[in-house]
Amino acid sequence: MISRSIALELQQSGVRWSPASGDAFVINREGFEGDVFVVSDMTIESHEFETGTILGFNGTTEWALDSVALEQALWLPHEHQLRELLRGAFRSLTRTGSGFRVEFVVAGRDTFVEEADASDAYATAVLALVRAAV
Image (cartoon, rainbow, N blue to C red; front, side):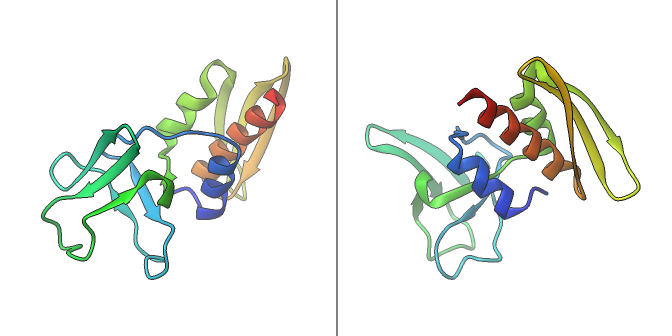
């Protein structure tokens, strides 16, 4: 799973999240530091309102939570979601002696990043693309 620090960098760089069933997230609020939640059509639904997106907790054991604003949630994208964000820039993922290497194209040049975790490698590549676009 992607690290919270890289997920926060993605959020701060402007990568936006439209919650869908199966998406993982954490709540940026005291008391929830170790909890990872998953959007589910049965328990945590994404509700769109004029004022913004709300994640509603329906009949879960999280009885203290009715809902949380999307701005209080930090998306933890899965590997396939990060690959989708890379789009046509993605070339390959390979295992290295110390982790994983993602090769991709940024600004017309072949490049790569290496991280201990495959999800973090994908996310670091996405960050490189976002930063190059600015």
